[in-house]
Structure formats: structure tokens, C-alpha cells
Image (tube, rainbow, N blue to C red):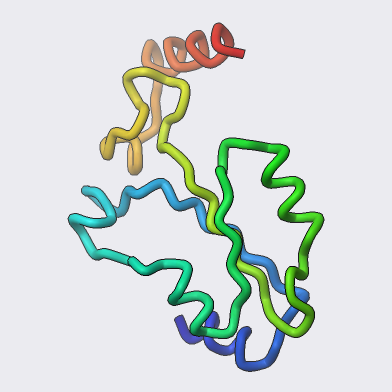
Length: 118
């Protein structure tokens, strides 16, 4: 938080932060562990300009990055709303996959689902 405050205080408009806001934290949901809301308003209160985007939409992400800096004289925070494990049925939005990686058969099954959906 000190770095975030510093960037806003010193008007570091050449700084862009992308937050993967997947609603999971540690071993539970963000809400169940430590609520961060109102999230965007916190960043704005530190002097940042915030944009909330759909983190799985590459076009939306590209467009947002092309707009940086959104406000001259302020750092930019892109809050990318995502779903952990998106596109893999046994991983999607499951806390387990916030701290674990697939191996062996799990990895092959995940890759197969991703390939078949593209």
C-alpha cells in the first residue's frame, strides 16, 4: 500500500498496474478471507485512475492498455475481473487451483479442454 500511495502522490503517470481480480485469496474467497471492497475506490483514493475490465477479453485489455495513461499525471490501475481456471471444468472458480498446479493426468485433461474450446 505504501508503494501505491507513493505512486499516486508523485503523479507517476508512466506506471500501469494490472490486478487479476479473480475473487480468490489464500485458501478461500476474497470476501471470506479479507474483503477488499470497495476495491476500485481504494485505488482512486490513492490518486490512481482505475478502469475495470473483463480480464478474459483480450480486445478489452488491449484497448485499455492503449488508453494508458488514462489521466495525465496519475498512475493507471486496470482491475481485470477474471475467473480462476476459466475454461477447465474441474478447475474453474475452485480455491484449490489458486495455490496448486495440475500435473500428469490433470494437466493433460486441462489442456484437452482448453484445446477443444478454442
